[in-house]
Image (cartoon, rainbow over all chains, first blue to last red):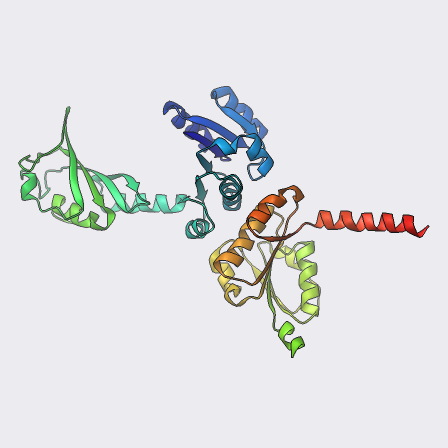
Length: 221
Length: 145
Protein backbone atom coordinates (compact mmCIF):
# COMPACT_ATOMS: atom_id res chain seq x y z
CA UNK A 1 0.00 0.00 0.00
CA UNK A 2 1.31 3.42 -0.97
CA UNK A 3 0.41 6.28 1.39
CA UNK A 4 0.75 10.01 0.77
CA UNK A 5 0.81 12.44 3.69
CA UNK A 6 0.18 16.14 3.04
CA UNK A 7 1.00 18.89 5.54
CA UNK A 8 1.17 18.80 9.33
CA UNK A 9 4.20 19.68 11.39
CA UNK A 10 5.38 17.40 14.17
CA UNK A 11 2.51 15.02 13.40
CA UNK A 12 4.17 14.03 10.11
CA UNK A 13 7.35 12.84 11.76
CA UNK A 14 5.54 10.44 14.05
CA UNK A 15 3.14 9.22 11.38
CA UNK A 16 6.04 8.55 9.04
CA UNK A 17 7.88 6.73 11.81
CA UNK A 18 4.83 4.57 12.49
CA UNK A 19 4.09 3.77 8.86
CA UNK A 20 7.75 3.02 8.16
CA UNK A 21 7.91 0.39 10.89
CA UNK A 22 4.88 -1.20 9.27
CA UNK A 23 6.84 -1.32 6.02
CA UNK A 24 4.55 0.90 3.99
CA UNK A 25 5.54 2.93 0.96
CA UNK A 26 5.35 6.63 1.75
CA UNK A 27 5.43 10.02 0.10
CA UNK A 28 5.29 13.26 2.08
CA UNK A 29 4.30 16.65 0.69
CA UNK A 30 5.02 19.73 2.77
CA UNK A 31 4.89 23.47 2.11
CA UNK A 32 7.67 24.35 4.50
CA UNK A 33 11.17 23.87 3.08
CA UNK A 34 12.90 23.57 6.47
CA UNK A 35 10.40 20.96 7.56
CA UNK A 36 11.12 19.00 4.36
CA UNK A 37 14.87 19.13 4.98
CA UNK A 38 14.42 18.05 8.56
CA UNK A 39 12.22 15.10 7.55
CA UNK A 40 14.58 14.04 4.77
CA UNK A 41 17.46 13.82 7.24
CA UNK A 42 15.55 11.47 9.53
CA UNK A 43 13.49 9.36 7.15
CA UNK A 44 14.22 7.49 3.96
CA UNK A 45 10.98 8.43 2.20
CA UNK A 46 10.18 10.57 -0.83
CA UNK A 47 9.61 14.11 0.31
CA UNK A 48 8.18 16.73 -2.02
CA UNK A 49 8.40 20.40 -1.16
CA UNK A 50 5.28 22.13 -2.40
CA UNK A 51 1.61 22.98 -1.91
CA UNK A 52 -0.47 19.81 -1.75
CA UNK A 53 -3.59 21.60 -2.97
CA UNK A 54 -1.83 22.26 -6.27
CA UNK A 55 -2.72 19.49 -8.76
CA UNK A 56 0.68 19.84 -10.45
CA UNK A 57 2.48 19.17 -7.16
CA UNK A 58 0.28 16.17 -6.36
CA UNK A 59 0.83 14.78 -9.83
CA UNK A 60 4.61 15.21 -9.63
CA UNK A 61 4.58 13.50 -6.26
CA UNK A 62 2.86 10.51 -7.86
CA UNK A 63 -0.62 10.81 -6.41
CA UNK A 64 -1.97 8.53 -9.14
CA UNK A 65 -0.10 5.55 -7.68
CA UNK A 66 -1.26 6.17 -4.12
CA UNK A 67 -3.89 4.09 -2.40
CA UNK A 68 -4.44 6.52 0.45
CA UNK A 69 -3.97 10.27 0.75
CA UNK A 70 -3.91 11.73 4.26
CA UNK A 71 -4.30 15.50 4.70
CA UNK A 72 -3.23 16.66 8.16
CA UNK A 73 -2.44 20.37 7.86
CA UNK A 74 -3.82 22.83 10.39
CA UNK A 75 -6.27 24.27 7.87
CA UNK A 76 -9.57 22.44 7.39
CA UNK A 77 -10.04 24.10 4.00
CA UNK A 78 -6.62 23.01 2.81
CA UNK A 79 -7.25 19.42 3.91
CA UNK A 80 -10.58 19.38 2.09
CA UNK A 81 -9.05 20.62 -1.16
CA UNK A 82 -6.13 18.16 -0.97
CA UNK A 83 -8.56 15.25 -0.56
CA UNK A 84 -10.87 16.50 -3.29
CA UNK A 85 -8.07 17.01 -5.80
CA UNK A 86 -6.63 13.57 -5.02
CA UNK A 87 -10.02 11.86 -5.06
CA UNK A 88 -11.94 13.65 -7.79
CA UNK A 89 -9.18 14.68 -10.19
CA UNK A 90 -6.80 11.75 -9.71
CA UNK A 91 -9.07 8.92 -8.65
CA UNK A 92 -7.43 8.10 -5.31
CA UNK A 93 -9.89 5.77 -3.60
CA UNK A 94 -9.26 6.51 0.03
CA UNK A 95 -8.78 10.03 1.30
CA UNK A 96 -8.54 11.08 4.91
CA UNK A 97 -8.81 14.61 6.28
CA UNK A 98 -8.17 15.82 9.81
CA UNK A 99 -10.40 18.72 10.87
CA UNK A 100 -10.43 21.21 13.73
CA UNK A 101 -14.14 22.00 13.51
CA UNK A 102 -16.19 18.87 14.39
CA UNK A 103 -19.05 20.13 12.21
CA UNK A 104 -16.82 19.75 9.18
CA UNK A 105 -16.85 15.96 9.60
CA UNK A 106 -20.29 15.56 8.03
CA UNK A 107 -19.75 18.39 5.55
CA UNK A 108 -16.48 16.99 4.20
CA UNK A 109 -17.97 13.51 3.89
CA UNK A 110 -20.80 14.92 1.82
CA UNK A 111 -18.23 16.70 -0.32
CA UNK A 112 -16.53 13.39 -1.11
CA UNK A 113 -13.78 12.84 1.48
CA UNK A 114 -13.85 9.17 2.49
CA UNK A 115 -12.76 9.54 6.12
CA UNK A 116 -12.86 12.66 8.25
CA UNK A 117 -11.37 12.79 11.72
CA UNK A 118 -12.04 15.54 14.22
CA UNK A 119 -9.34 15.85 16.85
CA UNK A 120 -11.75 17.66 19.15
CA UNK A 121 -14.23 14.76 18.94
CA UNK A 122 -11.53 12.19 19.65
CA UNK A 123 -10.18 14.05 22.66
CA UNK A 124 -13.69 14.57 23.98
CA UNK A 125 -14.63 10.91 23.64
CA UNK A 126 -11.42 9.76 25.32
CA UNK A 127 -11.96 12.13 28.22
CA UNK A 128 -15.60 11.08 28.51
CA UNK A 129 -14.64 7.45 28.70
CA UNK A 130 -11.80 7.99 31.16
CA UNK A 131 -13.85 10.15 33.42
CA UNK A 132 -16.68 7.64 33.58
CA UNK A 133 -14.69 4.44 34.01
CA UNK A 134 -11.06 4.64 34.95
CA UNK A 135 -10.33 0.92 34.77
CA UNK A 136 -11.57 0.66 31.24
CA UNK A 137 -9.52 1.61 28.30
CA UNK A 138 -11.25 1.78 24.98
CA UNK A 139 -8.47 0.52 22.79
CA UNK A 140 -9.72 1.46 19.41
CA UNK A 141 -12.93 2.54 17.79
CA UNK A 142 -13.86 0.68 14.61
CA UNK A 143 -16.40 1.79 12.03
CA UNK A 144 -16.18 5.38 13.19
CA UNK A 145 -16.76 4.49 16.80
CA UNK A 146 -19.73 2.16 16.35
CA UNK A 147 -17.69 -0.81 17.58
CA UNK A 148 -15.31 -0.65 20.54
CA UNK A 149 -12.50 -2.82 21.70
CA UNK A 150 -12.25 -2.42 25.47
CA UNK A 151 -9.55 -3.45 27.87
CA UNK A 152 -11.02 -3.91 31.36
CA UNK A 153 -8.91 -4.76 34.39
CA UNK A 154 -10.82 -6.64 37.08
CA UNK A 155 -10.79 -4.86 40.41
CA UNK A 156 -11.51 -6.43 43.84
CA UNK A 157 -15.00 -4.95 44.00
CA UNK A 158 -16.17 -6.11 40.58
CA UNK A 159 -19.43 -8.04 40.38
CA UNK A 160 -17.94 -10.51 37.91
CA UNK A 161 -15.06 -11.47 40.21
CA UNK A 162 -15.01 -15.19 40.94
CA UNK A 163 -17.72 -15.96 38.42
CA UNK A 164 -17.40 -17.99 35.26
CA UNK A 165 -18.07 -16.29 31.92
CA UNK A 166 -21.27 -18.29 31.55
CA UNK A 167 -22.56 -16.79 34.81
CA UNK A 168 -22.07 -13.21 33.66
CA UNK A 169 -24.89 -11.98 31.51
CA UNK A 170 -23.09 -10.00 28.85
CA UNK A 171 -25.41 -8.16 26.47
CA UNK A 172 -25.92 -9.27 22.89
CA UNK A 173 -23.40 -7.91 20.40
CA UNK A 174 -20.53 -8.24 22.85
CA UNK A 175 -17.91 -10.91 23.38
CA UNK A 176 -14.89 -11.47 25.62
CA UNK A 177 -12.18 -12.16 23.07
CA UNK A 178 -9.20 -12.63 25.35
CA UNK A 179 -8.25 -12.80 28.99
CA UNK A 180 -4.78 -11.67 29.98
CA UNK A 181 -3.69 -13.10 33.32
CA UNK A 182 -0.06 -12.12 33.98
CA UNK A 183 2.01 -13.96 31.39
CA UNK A 184 -0.93 -16.11 30.40
CA UNK A 185 -3.04 -15.03 27.48
CA UNK A 186 -6.06 -17.13 26.62
CA UNK A 187 -9.27 -17.21 24.68
CA UNK A 188 -11.82 -17.81 27.47
CA UNK A 189 -14.52 -20.44 27.48
CA UNK A 190 -17.82 -20.43 29.29
CA UNK A 191 -16.31 -22.13 32.33
CA UNK A 192 -13.32 -19.74 32.61
CA UNK A 193 -13.49 -18.08 36.04
CA UNK A 194 -12.60 -14.43 36.30
CA UNK A 195 -9.90 -13.52 38.83
CA UNK A 196 -8.73 -10.26 40.30
CA UNK A 197 -6.22 -8.47 38.09
CA UNK A 198 -7.40 -10.24 34.93
CA UNK A 199 -7.57 -8.03 31.89
CA UNK A 200 -10.57 -8.71 29.69
CA UNK A 201 -10.37 -7.74 26.05
CA UNK A 202 -13.96 -7.19 25.02
CA UNK A 203 -15.36 -6.49 21.59
CA UNK A 204 -18.73 -4.77 21.63
CA UNK A 205 -21.07 -2.41 19.86
CA UNK A 206 -20.59 1.04 21.38
CA UNK A 207 -24.31 1.19 22.10
CA UNK A 208 -24.10 -1.75 24.52
CA UNK A 209 -20.89 -0.54 26.17
CA UNK A 210 -22.65 0.65 29.34
CA UNK A 211 -24.36 -2.76 29.68
CA UNK A 212 -21.04 -4.54 29.25
CA UNK A 213 -19.48 -2.40 31.96
CA UNK A 214 -22.45 -3.01 34.24
CA UNK A 215 -22.18 -6.79 33.72
CA UNK A 216 -18.47 -6.79 34.50
CA UNK A 217 -18.31 -4.18 37.27
CA UNK A 218 -21.79 -4.42 38.68
CA UNK A 219 -22.39 -0.69 38.26
CA UNK A 220 -21.93 2.07 35.79
CA UNK A 221 -20.02 5.06 37.11
CA UNK B 1 -42.22 43.10 -11.32
CA UNK B 2 -38.93 41.95 -12.74
CA UNK B 3 -37.13 44.75 -11.04
CA UNK B 4 -38.78 43.86 -7.80
CA UNK B 5 -37.61 40.28 -8.04
CA UNK B 6 -34.02 41.30 -8.56
CA UNK B 7 -34.33 43.71 -5.63
CA UNK B 8 -35.36 40.84 -3.43
CA UNK B 9 -32.11 39.05 -4.01
CA UNK B 10 -30.37 38.20 -0.81
CA UNK B 11 -26.58 38.10 -1.09
CA UNK B 12 -23.99 36.78 1.36
CA UNK B 13 -20.40 37.89 0.85
CA UNK B 14 -17.59 36.32 2.87
CA UNK B 15 -14.41 38.37 3.13
CA UNK B 16 -14.49 42.15 3.47
CA UNK B 17 -11.23 42.85 1.69
CA UNK B 18 -11.01 45.41 -1.09
CA UNK B 19 -12.88 43.18 -3.52
CA UNK B 20 -15.53 41.98 -1.06
CA UNK B 21 -16.17 45.47 0.31
CA UNK B 22 -16.38 47.06 -3.11
CA UNK B 23 -18.73 44.37 -4.35
CA UNK B 24 -20.88 44.78 -1.22
CA UNK B 25 -21.15 48.52 -1.87
CA UNK B 26 -22.08 48.00 -5.52
CA UNK B 27 -24.70 45.35 -4.77
CA UNK B 28 -26.22 47.43 -1.97
CA UNK B 29 -26.46 50.42 -4.31
CA UNK B 30 -28.27 48.29 -6.87
CA UNK B 31 -30.88 47.49 -4.25
CA UNK B 32 -29.93 44.03 -3.00
CA UNK B 33 -30.00 42.81 0.58
CA UNK B 34 -26.37 42.24 1.49
CA UNK B 35 -24.75 40.48 4.44
CA UNK B 36 -20.97 40.67 4.60
CA UNK B 37 -18.92 38.46 6.94
CA UNK B 38 -15.32 38.92 8.04
CA UNK B 39 -13.30 37.80 11.04
CA UNK B 40 -11.51 41.14 11.44
CA UNK B 41 -13.61 44.07 12.70
CA UNK B 42 -11.20 46.52 11.03
CA UNK B 43 -12.08 45.05 7.62
CA UNK B 44 -15.52 46.69 7.68
CA UNK B 45 -13.90 50.14 7.47
CA UNK B 46 -13.57 49.46 3.76
CA UNK B 47 -17.35 49.66 3.33
CA UNK B 48 -18.81 52.91 2.05
CA UNK B 49 -20.34 55.24 4.63
CA UNK B 50 -23.78 54.81 3.16
CA UNK B 51 -23.60 51.02 3.19
CA UNK B 52 -26.87 49.78 4.66
CA UNK B 53 -26.37 46.03 4.55
CA UNK B 54 -25.56 43.80 7.52
CA UNK B 55 -22.07 43.11 8.78
CA UNK B 56 -21.17 40.00 10.74
CA UNK B 57 -17.86 39.75 12.55
CA UNK B 58 -17.22 36.00 12.67
CA UNK B 59 -15.55 32.96 11.11
CA UNK B 60 -17.73 31.96 8.18
CA UNK B 61 -16.29 28.45 8.02
CA UNK B 62 -18.45 27.64 11.04
CA UNK B 63 -21.83 26.39 9.93
CA UNK B 64 -23.59 28.18 12.80
CA UNK B 65 -22.29 31.50 11.51
CA UNK B 66 -23.51 30.81 7.99
CA UNK B 67 -26.92 29.91 9.38
CA UNK B 68 -26.92 33.10 11.42
CA UNK B 69 -26.16 35.02 8.22
CA UNK B 70 -29.27 33.43 6.73
CA UNK B 71 -27.62 31.11 4.21
CA UNK B 72 -30.75 28.96 4.09
CA UNK B 73 -32.61 31.78 2.36
CA UNK B 74 -29.75 33.32 0.40
CA UNK B 75 -30.00 33.58 -3.41
CA UNK B 76 -26.37 34.46 -4.00
CA UNK B 77 -23.18 33.49 -2.18
CA UNK B 78 -19.79 35.03 -2.87
CA UNK B 79 -16.52 33.85 -1.31
CA UNK B 80 -13.79 36.48 -1.43
CA UNK B 81 -11.49 35.70 1.49
CA UNK B 82 -7.75 35.95 0.85
CA UNK B 83 -7.36 32.15 0.87
CA UNK B 84 -8.26 30.11 -2.23
CA UNK B 85 -8.86 26.92 -0.25
CA UNK B 86 -11.23 28.67 2.14
CA UNK B 87 -13.14 30.15 -0.79
CA UNK B 88 -13.42 26.76 -2.46
CA UNK B 89 -14.61 25.16 0.75
CA UNK B 90 -17.15 27.92 1.45
CA UNK B 91 -18.48 27.83 -2.10
CA UNK B 92 -19.06 24.09 -1.87
CA UNK B 93 -20.76 24.38 1.51
CA UNK B 94 -23.08 27.06 0.11
CA UNK B 95 -23.81 25.14 -3.07
CA UNK B 96 -23.89 21.51 -2.01
CA UNK B 97 -24.95 21.69 1.64
CA UNK B 98 -27.31 24.67 1.62
CA UNK B 99 -28.35 24.62 -2.04
CA UNK B 100 -27.69 28.31 -2.76
CA UNK B 101 -28.55 28.86 -6.44
CA UNK B 102 -25.82 31.27 -7.49
CA UNK B 103 -22.40 30.67 -5.97
CA UNK B 104 -19.11 32.17 -7.04
CA UNK B 105 -15.61 32.15 -5.53
CA UNK B 106 -12.67 34.45 -6.08
CA UNK B 107 -9.43 32.55 -6.66
CA UNK B 108 -5.89 33.81 -7.02
CA UNK B 109 -4.37 30.71 -8.64
CA UNK B 110 -5.47 30.46 -12.28
CA UNK B 111 -3.66 27.21 -13.09
CA UNK B 112 -5.91 25.17 -10.81
CA UNK B 113 -8.82 25.64 -13.17
CA UNK B 114 -8.96 21.88 -13.68
CA UNK B 115 -9.84 21.41 -10.02
CA UNK B 116 -12.57 24.04 -10.02
CA UNK B 117 -14.10 22.46 -13.09
CA UNK B 118 -13.91 19.05 -11.46
CA UNK B 119 -15.81 20.44 -8.47
CA UNK B 120 -18.28 22.24 -10.77
CA UNK B 121 -17.56 25.60 -9.17
CA UNK B 122 -17.92 29.02 -10.70
CA UNK B 123 -14.73 30.96 -10.07
CA UNK B 124 -13.41 34.39 -10.96
CA UNK B 125 -9.69 35.01 -11.10
CA UNK B 126 -8.96 38.77 -10.95
CA UNK B 127 -5.49 38.27 -12.40
CA UNK B 128 -6.90 36.80 -15.61
CA UNK B 129 -9.53 39.54 -15.87
CA UNK B 130 -6.85 42.23 -15.44
CA UNK B 131 -4.52 40.58 -17.95
CA UNK B 132 -7.34 40.50 -20.48
CA UNK B 133 -8.18 44.15 -19.81
CA UNK B 134 -4.54 45.08 -20.29
CA UNK B 135 -4.34 43.06 -23.49
CA UNK B 136 -7.50 44.65 -24.85
CA UNK B 137 -6.16 48.09 -24.02
CA UNK B 138 -2.80 47.39 -25.64
CA UNK B 139 -4.25 45.80 -28.74
CA UNK B 140 -6.98 48.43 -28.99
CA UNK B 141 -4.32 51.16 -28.83
CA UNK B 142 -2.32 49.57 -31.61
CA UNK B 143 -5.41 49.34 -33.76
CA UNK B 144 -6.31 52.96 -33.03
CA UNK B 145 -3.06 54.38 -34.25
